[in-house]
Image (cartoon, rainbow over all chains, first blue to last red; front, side):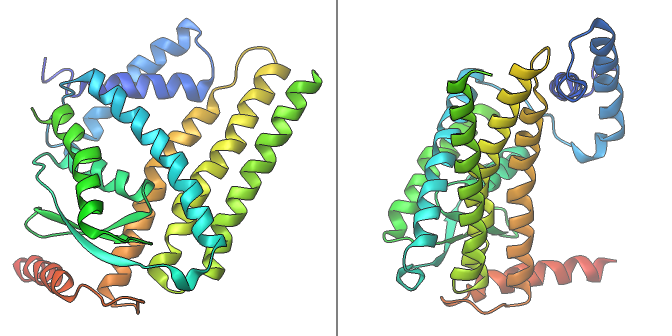
Amino acid sequence: MQRFLPHPLLTVMLALIWLLLSNSIAPGQMVLGILLGWALPFFALQFWPDKVKVHKPLTLLKFTYILLHDIIEANFIVALRILGNPDKLRPAFIVVPIDLNSDFAMSILANTTCLTPGSLSALLAPDRKSILVHTMDVGDIDAFIHTIKTRYEQPLKEIFEE
Amino acid sequence: MNILLEILLSVLIVAGASFTFIGSLGLARLRDFYTRLHGPTKGTTLGVGCLLIASAIFFSTRDEGISLHEGLITLFLFITAPISAHLLAKAALHLKVESLVPLPDEAIERKNKQHQKYHSVD
Protein backbone atom coordinates (compact mmCIF):
# COMPACT_ATOMS: atom_id res chain seq x y z
CA MET A 1 0.00 0.00 0.00
CA GLN A 2 2.65 2.41 1.18
CA ARG A 3 4.87 1.53 -1.78
CA PHE A 4 2.29 1.71 -4.51
CA LEU A 5 0.33 4.67 -3.24
CA PRO A 6 2.69 6.86 -1.20
CA HIS A 7 0.35 9.81 -0.65
CA PRO A 8 -3.35 9.00 -1.08
CA LEU A 9 -4.37 12.54 -0.09
CA LEU A 10 -1.99 14.11 -2.59
CA THR A 11 -3.29 11.77 -5.28
CA VAL A 12 -6.87 12.91 -4.70
CA MET A 13 -5.81 16.57 -4.67
CA LEU A 14 -3.81 16.26 -7.90
CA ALA A 15 -6.66 14.46 -9.65
CA LEU A 16 -9.05 17.24 -8.62
CA ILE A 17 -6.60 19.93 -9.73
CA TRP A 18 -6.24 18.16 -13.07
CA LEU A 19 -10.02 18.15 -13.55
CA LEU A 20 -10.13 21.86 -12.72
CA LEU A 21 -7.30 22.57 -15.14
CA SER A 22 -8.92 20.71 -18.00
CA ASN A 23 -12.26 22.21 -16.96
CA SER A 24 -14.20 19.07 -17.77
CA ILE A 25 -15.47 15.95 -16.04
CA ALA A 26 -15.31 13.69 -19.08
CA PRO A 27 -14.43 10.10 -18.06
CA GLY A 28 -11.22 10.27 -20.09
CA GLN A 29 -10.01 13.30 -18.15
CA MET A 30 -10.89 11.58 -14.88
CA VAL A 31 -8.75 8.58 -15.76
CA LEU A 32 -5.90 10.83 -16.85
CA GLY A 33 -6.22 12.87 -13.64
CA ILE A 34 -6.12 9.77 -11.45
CA LEU A 35 -3.12 8.44 -13.37
CA LEU A 36 -1.26 11.73 -12.95
CA GLY A 37 -2.27 11.92 -9.29
CA TRP A 38 -0.88 8.45 -8.80
CA ALA A 39 2.37 8.96 -10.73
CA LEU A 40 3.43 12.47 -9.73
CA PRO A 41 3.82 11.82 -5.95
CA PHE A 42 6.65 9.38 -6.75
CA PHE A 43 8.66 12.26 -8.19
CA ALA A 44 7.79 14.56 -5.29
CA LEU A 45 8.47 11.95 -2.64
CA GLN A 46 11.50 13.66 -1.16
CA PHE A 47 9.56 16.87 -0.58
CA TRP A 48 7.09 15.01 1.63
CA PRO A 49 9.14 13.07 4.13
CA ASP A 50 6.32 12.86 6.67
CA LYS A 51 2.96 11.39 6.03
CA VAL A 52 0.23 14.01 6.09
CA LYS A 53 -2.85 12.76 7.85
CA VAL A 54 -6.06 14.65 8.43
CA HIS A 55 -7.43 13.50 11.76
CA LYS A 56 -10.47 15.70 12.00
CA PRO A 57 -11.96 16.63 8.61
CA LEU A 58 -14.73 18.62 10.28
CA THR A 59 -12.26 20.80 12.15
CA LEU A 60 -10.45 21.30 8.84
CA LEU A 61 -13.67 22.55 7.26
CA LYS A 62 -14.28 24.88 10.17
CA PHE A 63 -10.70 26.11 10.00
CA THR A 64 -11.07 26.81 6.27
CA TYR A 65 -14.20 28.79 6.96
CA ILE A 66 -12.55 30.84 9.72
CA LEU A 67 -9.57 31.41 7.45
CA LEU A 68 -11.65 32.68 4.52
CA HIS A 69 -13.62 34.93 6.85
CA ASP A 70 -10.42 36.32 8.38
CA ILE A 71 -8.79 36.85 4.98
CA ILE A 72 -11.69 39.02 3.86
CA GLU A 73 -11.65 40.91 7.16
CA ALA A 74 -7.87 41.37 6.99
CA ASN A 75 -8.19 42.77 3.47
CA PHE A 76 -10.52 45.49 4.69
CA ILE A 77 -8.36 46.25 7.73
CA VAL A 78 -5.18 46.53 5.67
CA ALA A 79 -6.93 48.67 3.05
CA LEU A 80 -8.12 51.04 5.78
CA ARG A 81 -4.64 51.24 7.31
CA ILE A 82 -3.10 52.07 3.94
CA LEU A 83 -5.64 54.80 3.31
CA GLY A 84 -5.32 56.15 6.86
CA ASN A 85 -2.33 57.99 8.23
CA PRO A 86 0.69 55.69 7.84
CA ASP A 87 2.57 57.54 10.58
CA LYS A 88 0.04 56.38 13.15
CA LEU A 89 0.76 52.69 12.58
CA ARG A 90 2.45 50.78 15.37
CA PRO A 91 4.43 48.03 13.63
CA ALA A 92 6.29 45.45 15.72
CA PHE A 93 8.31 42.26 15.53
CA ILE A 94 6.74 39.64 17.74
CA VAL A 95 8.08 36.25 18.69
CA VAL A 96 5.19 33.82 18.77
CA PRO A 97 6.01 30.55 20.54
CA ILE A 98 4.63 27.57 18.64
CA ASP A 99 4.11 24.09 19.78
CA LEU A 100 3.60 22.09 16.57
CA ASN A 101 5.65 19.05 15.62
CA SER A 102 4.67 18.41 12.04
CA ASP A 103 6.41 20.43 9.33
CA PHE A 104 3.26 20.53 7.30
CA ALA A 105 1.18 22.05 10.11
CA MET A 106 3.96 24.54 10.76
CA SER A 107 4.06 25.74 7.16
CA ILE A 108 0.28 26.05 7.11
CA LEU A 109 0.47 28.16 10.27
CA ALA A 110 3.16 30.37 8.71
CA ASN A 111 1.05 30.75 5.57
CA THR A 112 -1.99 31.59 7.67
CA THR A 113 -0.23 34.30 9.63
CA CYS A 114 0.81 35.84 6.31
CA LEU A 115 -2.73 35.93 4.97
CA THR A 116 -4.48 37.14 8.08
CA PRO A 117 -4.69 39.62 10.79
CA GLY A 118 -2.20 42.16 9.47
CA SER A 119 0.84 40.01 10.14
CA LEU A 120 3.64 38.36 8.22
CA SER A 121 5.75 35.41 9.30
CA ALA A 122 9.39 36.29 8.81
CA LEU A 123 11.64 33.72 10.47
CA LEU A 124 11.36 30.27 11.93
CA ALA A 125 13.60 29.89 14.97
CA PRO A 126 16.35 27.26 14.53
CA ASP A 127 14.86 25.12 17.30
CA ARG A 128 11.42 25.27 15.64
CA LYS A 129 9.87 26.48 18.85
CA SER A 130 8.81 29.93 17.69
CA ILE A 131 8.19 32.03 14.65
CA LEU A 132 9.07 35.67 14.28
CA VAL A 133 6.08 37.63 13.05
CA HIS A 134 6.00 41.18 11.77
CA THR A 135 2.75 43.00 12.42
CA MET A 136 1.57 46.16 10.80
CA ASP A 137 -0.33 47.74 13.63
CA VAL A 138 -0.69 46.11 17.00
CA GLY A 139 -1.75 47.52 20.35
CA ASP A 140 -1.71 44.59 22.72
CA ILE A 141 1.06 42.13 21.91
CA ASP A 142 -0.08 39.45 24.36
CA ALA A 143 -3.59 39.53 22.95
CA PHE A 144 -2.14 39.13 19.46
CA ILE A 145 -0.11 36.08 20.47
CA HIS A 146 -3.17 34.66 22.18
CA THR A 147 -5.24 35.09 19.01
CA ILE A 148 -2.70 33.29 16.83
CA LYS A 149 -2.40 30.44 19.31
CA THR A 150 -6.09 29.83 19.94
CA ARG A 151 -7.57 30.77 16.60
CA TYR A 152 -5.08 29.14 14.25
CA GLU A 153 -2.55 26.97 16.03
CA GLN A 154 -4.97 25.00 18.19
CA PRO A 155 -7.18 23.79 15.29
CA LEU A 156 -4.11 22.95 13.18
CA LYS A 157 -2.74 20.87 16.03
CA GLU A 158 -6.01 19.00 16.30
CA ILE A 159 -6.27 18.44 12.55
CA PHE A 160 -2.76 17.25 11.78
CA GLU A 161 -1.27 15.94 14.98
CA GLU A 162 -3.59 14.33 17.47
CA MET B 1 -27.44 39.08 -20.71
CA ASN B 2 -29.56 39.85 -17.70
CA ILE B 3 -29.21 43.43 -16.45
CA LEU B 4 -28.96 42.36 -12.81
CA LEU B 5 -26.14 40.02 -13.69
CA GLU B 6 -24.31 42.81 -15.45
CA ILE B 7 -24.64 45.04 -12.42
CA LEU B 8 -23.32 42.27 -10.17
CA LEU B 9 -20.36 41.70 -12.47
CA SER B 10 -19.56 45.41 -12.68
CA VAL B 11 -19.65 45.75 -8.89
CA LEU B 12 -17.32 42.77 -8.49
CA ILE B 13 -14.87 44.09 -11.08
CA VAL B 14 -14.81 47.60 -9.62
CA ALA B 15 -14.38 46.24 -6.09
CA GLY B 16 -11.60 43.94 -7.25
CA ALA B 17 -9.80 46.73 -9.08
CA SER B 18 -10.12 49.06 -6.06
CA PHE B 19 -8.66 46.51 -3.63
CA THR B 20 -5.81 45.70 -5.96
CA PHE B 21 -5.13 49.40 -6.39
CA ILE B 22 -5.18 50.08 -2.64
CA GLY B 23 -2.83 47.15 -2.07
CA SER B 24 -0.35 48.61 -4.56
CA LEU B 25 -0.84 52.09 -3.15
CA GLY B 26 0.49 50.67 0.12
CA LEU B 27 3.89 50.33 -1.54
CA ALA B 28 4.04 54.09 -2.00
CA ARG B 29 2.35 55.23 1.20
CA LEU B 30 3.82 53.01 3.88
CA ARG B 31 7.05 53.93 5.56
CA ASP B 32 9.38 50.95 5.71
CA PHE B 33 10.12 47.75 3.85
CA TYR B 34 8.42 45.41 6.30
CA THR B 35 5.10 47.24 6.48
CA ARG B 36 5.13 47.64 2.70
CA LEU B 37 5.10 43.88 2.38
CA HIS B 38 1.65 43.81 3.96
CA GLY B 39 -0.10 45.78 1.22
CA PRO B 40 0.47 43.44 -1.71
CA THR B 41 0.04 40.21 0.28
CA LYS B 42 -3.26 41.06 1.93
CA GLY B 43 -4.73 44.01 0.11
CA THR B 44 -4.63 42.14 -3.15
CA THR B 45 -5.94 38.69 -2.24
CA LEU B 46 -9.49 39.99 -1.98
CA GLY B 47 -9.00 42.18 -5.06
CA VAL B 48 -7.87 39.32 -7.25
CA GLY B 49 -10.52 37.15 -5.59
CA CYS B 50 -13.31 39.51 -6.68
CA LEU B 51 -11.98 39.67 -10.24
CA LEU B 52 -11.78 35.89 -10.40
CA ILE B 53 -15.31 35.44 -9.10
CA ALA B 54 -16.50 37.90 -11.73
CA SER B 55 -14.62 35.97 -14.40
CA ALA B 56 -16.06 32.64 -13.23
CA ILE B 57 -19.64 34.00 -13.28
CA PHE B 58 -19.17 35.65 -16.67
CA PHE B 59 -17.82 32.60 -18.45
CA SER B 60 -20.23 30.23 -16.72
CA THR B 61 -23.25 32.19 -17.91
CA ARG B 62 -21.95 32.96 -21.38
CA ASP B 63 -20.53 29.70 -22.62
CA GLU B 64 -21.80 26.21 -22.21
CA GLY B 65 -20.77 24.61 -18.93
CA ILE B 66 -19.33 26.18 -15.82
CA SER B 67 -15.88 27.64 -15.60
CA LEU B 68 -13.78 26.58 -12.63
CA HIS B 69 -10.27 27.57 -13.67
CA GLU B 70 -10.60 30.53 -11.36
CA GLY B 71 -10.80 28.35 -8.27
CA LEU B 72 -7.41 26.98 -9.20
CA ILE B 73 -5.91 30.44 -9.62
CA THR B 74 -7.21 31.37 -6.16
CA LEU B 75 -5.66 28.25 -4.67
CA PHE B 76 -2.26 28.94 -6.23
CA LEU B 77 -2.43 32.58 -5.20
CA PHE B 78 -3.15 31.67 -1.58
CA ILE B 79 -0.21 29.29 -1.58
CA THR B 80 2.34 31.50 -3.33
CA ALA B 81 1.61 35.01 -2.01
CA PRO B 82 2.52 34.22 1.63
CA ILE B 83 5.61 32.29 0.58
CA SER B 84 7.02 35.14 -1.49
CA ALA B 85 6.25 37.59 1.32
CA HIS B 86 7.93 35.27 3.83
CA LEU B 87 11.06 34.95 1.70
CA LEU B 88 11.26 38.70 1.09
CA ALA B 89 10.95 39.35 4.83
CA LYS B 90 13.54 36.71 5.59
CA ALA B 91 16.00 38.13 3.09
CA ALA B 92 15.40 41.64 4.43
CA LEU B 93 16.08 40.51 8.00
CA HIS B 94 19.24 38.75 6.90
CA LEU B 95 20.48 41.94 5.25
CA LYS B 96 19.20 43.97 8.23
CA VAL B 97 17.12 46.30 6.13
CA GLU B 98 16.12 49.37 8.11
CA SER B 99 12.85 49.28 9.98
CA LEU B 100 10.67 51.72 11.89
CA VAL B 101 10.94 49.52 14.95
CA PRO B 102 14.07 47.94 16.40
CA LEU B 103 15.08 44.79 14.55
CA PRO B 104 14.88 41.56 16.55
CA ASP B 105 18.66 41.16 16.65
CA GLU B 106 18.71 38.12 18.85
CA ALA B 107 16.45 36.10 16.55
CA ILE B 108 18.49 37.09 13.49
CA GLU B 109 21.77 36.14 15.18
CA ARG B 110 20.44 32.73 16.09
CA LYS B 111 19.28 32.16 12.53
CA ASN B 112 22.61 33.27 11.08
CA LYS B 113 24.47 30.92 13.42
CA GLN B 114 22.31 28.10 12.13
CA HIS B 115 23.23 28.98 8.53
CA GLN B 116 26.93 29.08 9.42
CA LYS B 117 26.62 25.67 11.00
CA TYR B 118 25.17 24.23 7.83
CA HIS B 119 27.91 25.77 5.74
CA SER B 120 30.73 24.52 7.93
CA VAL B 121 29.39 20.97 7.58
CA ASP B 122 29.70 21.15 3.77
